[in-house]
Length: 602
Image (cartoon, rainbow, N blue to C red; front, side, top):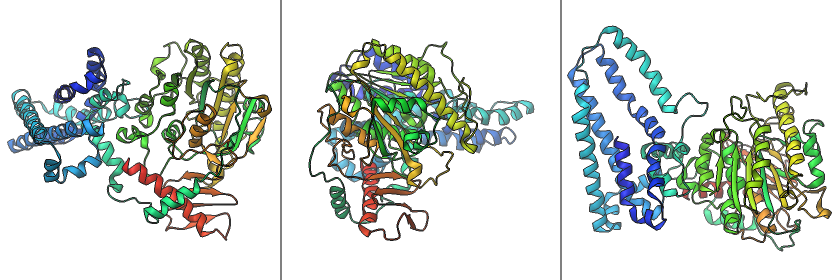
């Protein structure tokens, strides 16, 4: 009840902004419904202390324990009221919820008072006091008297002590589903202010603090002064000319982006993998351009999506998609295409709350977003979600309903455990990764079926297909996770829209998935300046390098050298040459330092 009341106060306070965006009343009040699950989870976290006190009171009746419980609740109400008032103060300027960064400002109340307009300061102070009073009075009138005063039987007390922890745990994680709850659960609108209102302030603040606890003030990957790092980055990205190969027959094709879950280069015969795992992909290579030196910058799906759609490299410690106050500052390929007349759609057979992906996808402005619960109820599914054959089959039919030109993205899932796809597993080798390669064989088979059906559709001839992995995966070759071989992934541009002279060719330019933005948008003659980490892989003059992050360090590939640095390994490096130049080492260090600095302060 209290969370809903503070949400109402937030919306009333920001009525001018709601009116400016022409947001309707019905869409606004939907936020109260979408907020319930996260509010309930937050409540369960808060109730841990009251439960422990009540558990003791079940067997030891002491009134002072009730007093502790009441004062604990008063303090929670006051802290949440303070957070709400602070959020009201920062939202009009920052357009974000209260985060760890804002907490640093709250450490200096005098500075807050001096920098705020006097009227605004006292209005927020008044709101804080009103929220405190309303919350405490509500609690005292309807809830406080129940503490420790009921005469319960011993059996009830034991059941209470045994069952409530289980219920609290389930409430904290949002239920019995595979993926614990996160902010994505409350995202529902293309108007970010409504999503901001729906997300519970305490839950969001906890995530923000948890993700940045060790990096409040200092970049843990600081190797040199910022000026030197900036100079090295300029040199790294220096491009002496623009002689881009224009590979398309039109600059406004439909675009179908197929993001393959966990596909390693070792699944692809043309990239050095064993034959027979992905024969359909091998056929598709003849219809387009295979990029043979593309690396995943991270090892998690949410990192891969931010790299692909926003051109932002992955980094150690955390993922930018987990924090709405940070990812809203990223550029969006979908938004740029939408501004150029494209309709947009995103499809995924699983739950988008994983890695807070749903809120990030909504931020990207896709017109249509489909996850497991949005597909027809009769669609066959496994433990993780709807199998790839059915999501690919759905997309090939649904694309014809979209306004052209369209940009659609589909994220597969069947190359992820538990490998329960309804298909034979013909590959009897692979040792520890036999299930993985059979999962890839399954997805590849239905990738072939997808293209077979797509070729019969009227939109096919004017469509560019981009097939790329979100990240790599351990393969039957068991590469070291820090090695460059481990992080190599497939990327293919194909379709009839590609000029005939480029079909069946290979592009050896060294790069990453975050280079897709600049590479694609340059083909469409659209601006790429917002994607500062993305380079055009179809420009022969663009620099040759690739970056990948490890758990606590950086991998850097700069022919003929490469090295990996892991901070936790006593600052030891390992590389492919005993004569690694100091300039190459500094490039990798500067890249990681700069990316993490941007993550910290954006």
